[in-house]
Image (cartoon, rainbow, N blue to C red; front, side, top):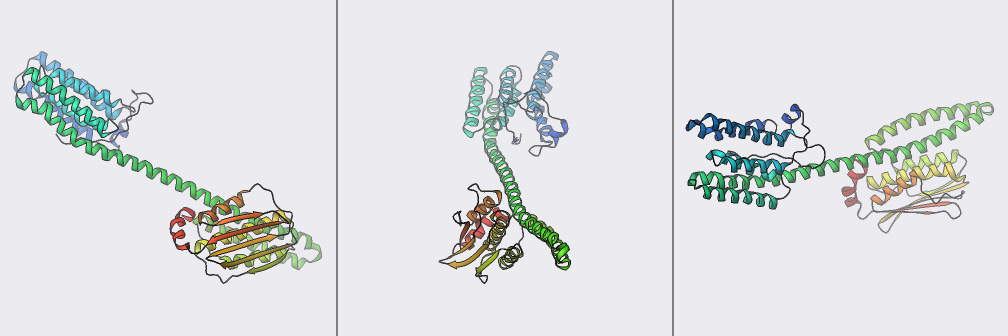
Length: 392
């Protein structure tokens, strides 16, 4: 009889008598059609009645025992929540009962020992159960004075089969835990991706819609006074809208193509359109790793969007410099200041910065000052460790 292996989580929840659909059992990736093959080994149980030309009464008893065994055996596969130990115990008891009338009742011991390691949670429990079966069969065999071969097949052989299956059962349990861990990783990856898309869309659309609103209001005011300028602003609104659509698609794919220099230039132009005096002393020639540049670009976008929406500022200062192995971005305005409660945009900005080992500080005195510091010495290692969690 080969090693019988199947992977099953024995559960005590739910209805223990609920049956699985036939198709679901046959398509189970852990055993498939195998139970229908394994059960053929039950044929050994009928060798003695055939050879000894057993009476009709013995045939009826053997048939009844085989029927009970089949119920216990297939119950392990067809029941939604089988009581594994009860099924195995029932098989062992059948062996003990039929040893009195059929020496091939050892077949039930073999099935019980083969299934037991898969119905418990630890190897220790499996070995304890196997030695219990072995001790019971040995005591009964010696009491009945059965021959050595019969004693071997009822006591030693089940221990060999069960002992081998403890290895496969432990491997199956490890594989099961690995599958669950992989499923959890996949779930967390999906959650992280949804959060990334939410942050990026908030930053992109929040900024772009603010610019569209600003230019649309300006075009409305200029419609009668300066139609040519109003038409120019409307054309820019159309261009920005198309650009926003491209950026949304890029955000979903996880790419950034504009770069920090272009973002700073766009921020300066947008602020000046809104009538804000801009002081930009940013060192746009800095050589930044892609991840750091992307985070700083989004920080510039979110910071400028907040200035446009909430600050009512007259001046805004953008400062970018590299010093002591780090890069520092400062966005400062003389507006109304902001609430102490962080919104989605600022919270998303802080998450990005902290994922790269940086810091974000906010001051509300005499306006609002955002100071973002990113380390550059360990940028390569941060890119390797964090890139997938941020942009995958």
